[in-house]
Length: 118
Image (cartoon, rainbow, N blue to C red; front, top):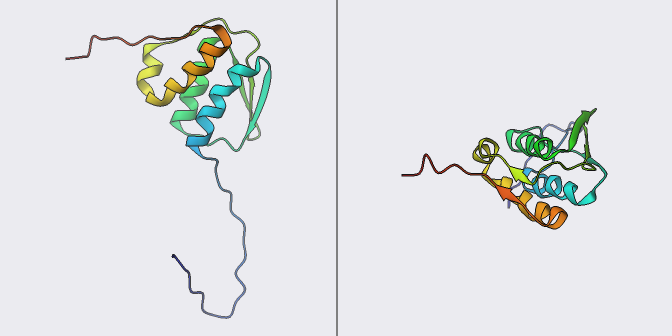
């Protein structure tokens, strides 16, 4: 068990901000497709993977905005059920979107080019 030994007789106090978990955020972001309306997410880490998920949502027709640490996703008007190759290649875990797309649209497609495959 990890432990800290604090010496000096002074009170230890302070504040810190703990970012949300990537592994928890990605499926929740995908789940906003199922809402068919406005979803508000808080404490989503501002990292490459979450940014790619937002780009995928935009390609599918969602509106995504940031407002003071809050993410607002409007999934009312989906215009596509396809995740483009260029976004798929940037983040393998984008595959979590397919389940929500299938449930929402009864179809989902991941476009992957096989040109690079040897």
